[in-house]
Image 1 (cartoon, rainbow, N blue to C red):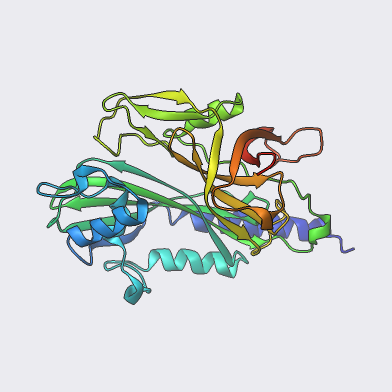
Image 2: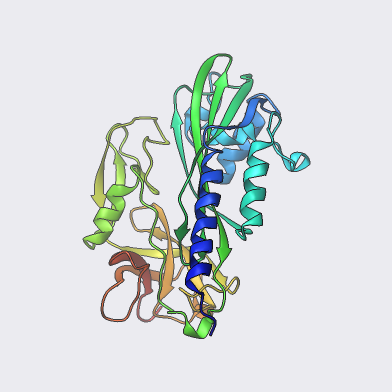
Length: 329
């Protein structure tokens, strides 16, 4: 085993401080200036998006249609032919990534995004955008490795009018070395991402309740949770508690990539609940190769991060819903 001397530790700490200071200098620098969407907002792309998402909201079709708000980033993307970056991109973001690469943070993973909508986009709108490096975190240690969270903010406009803001966060990190799979806890489940739109769902799960949003305008049930109804556009809603019964609508068997939190192969299903909405979850209580479309299942709640051996992510216990195959299925 190799030990660092006091002088080596001081050098390492000094280098880390210098790197942190250089990274902070990128905050506020432009990553893209006066970028222009590759295509105007258009009906065919809206149709493809809605078909892929299964979104049948009438607001997105016919005369006077608008684009789904969650398409905000789609209008700024350069496409496969523009892999070097969006039009208007500056050198700042590339320099930041190169600096992190040189520091050993050669891996990257997208962690989350946030969007705010100021006005709807309509077919024919020409989108322009500016992107800024909003923040670079201090050094963080995660299960994946040690690195830095980088957040960019993109303001999307039509003319001079703000249409929306898209924040995107990545982790640039140095992968953890020297940990074999055998020495890694097998039940170290990742914590679900909770935001202001879905917090009520996860609060219900923590209490052993499967809550579904219900539009108070038209009564349509929806899942996953959304800020507005995809059937009538109403922003008001309440909840109903699902009974937990359902059937496997579709499923996949995960073999790769291996991840210490799970033991592949295992089945992940899209379950159609008795109430009519669909929900993703692990299928338990039956071998992965016995899962079938139409199989009846029942929701149950598993607690992780307890003292009983099921380890969470180190930030306290949490609950996840899974689906158990019914006996005789």
